Image (cartoon, rainbow, N blue to C red; front, side, top):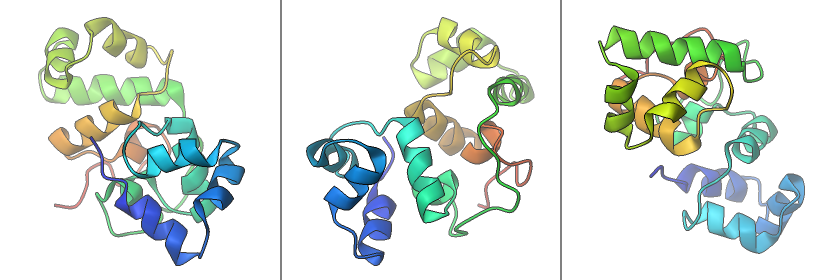
Length: 151
């Protein structure tokens, strides 16, 4: 599971309360508190709202980079995301079944991601980035560079 320390650090650096952020995300404070404390998974769409609000990248939130933001960041592109996942899989000579096994998810989910039917889940994005050193923002089609994370 990903670490949510940066989410808390960003909130506190702006002197916001959990209620302030819960209001921005249109959720109950208790729900936001569960996400921030890693007791529940942050929905990707809500986390991306926070990225936009704080003007930081998803890679920054995950702790993959210390750069707050990338240039020319865009909205999620499901088609591009699917193609990039397929490209990553092929680069590593993996079948959909092998990749699914590596990520501990069903192969049909890989198929649906590659066809651009769904946004790649947060935990899957994190696992892909950690294992293959690839930017989460790149995988989602939000940026074109950098593709790989700094080591």
